Image 1 (spheres, rainbow, N blue to C red):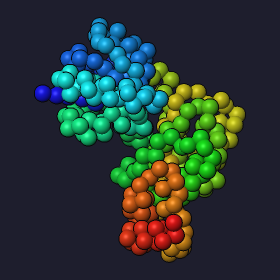
Image 2: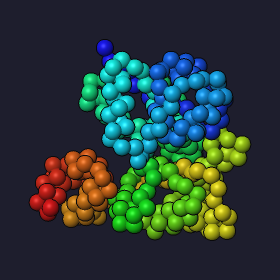
Image 3: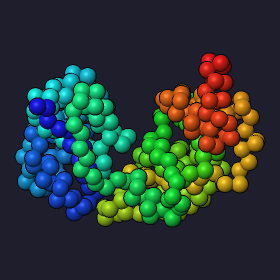
Image 4: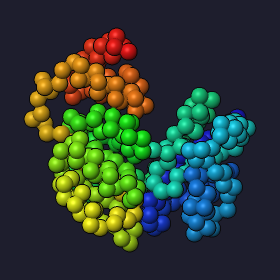
Length: 277
């Protein structure tokens, strides 16, 4: 009988946020797959947990993944964690979960904090509808195509960003989105936790004078609801679909997303995109 993969959330900064169930599960599994074993070891050491750690990250080979799956199939239970927060969200654990389902392996979740949701909750921006966009690509074309595809997105948008790229990202957002309201959340749950509310133009000016520090969650106001989607031609909508596909989204998903904001039907967009390509 095969074992189980446990997707285990961990604190995003303050170890005091760890839960009883997280600790019990970390103690009970046979081994733990960690994005950075050094980071996870600090957590385990804090709570006197001794487990085998396997390095599992973006650059792990297929052989590493297959070995993990093989061990679970042989009856071992495994945990997967990320450096902070919920694994499998903008995280290599996503692929491991997919492989488990492909091999009929049971997957269970042990929930924990998420930087994205925590930042949204204290952003002061609308929370009823939102879209998580993760990190923007460092490749200029993919980055600009991604931003272009979100120009008319009416839901609140959530992005992650590293400090050394923050200023460039804010400048690009200002160019593509206009002067929207944003919330910049950094070092959440840590000693220097900070939430700053700006217009995008104000944020660009602020961080041109002050060096960004810490990991950021950027919450961006969606496009105005008064936006008239009649301004979007079919060619415009198809181009937006193409931008999403180029960014790695499935064609059907891209058509579905653009249909929501363009006024065109998903089938209409799919057909037009396929005919053009």
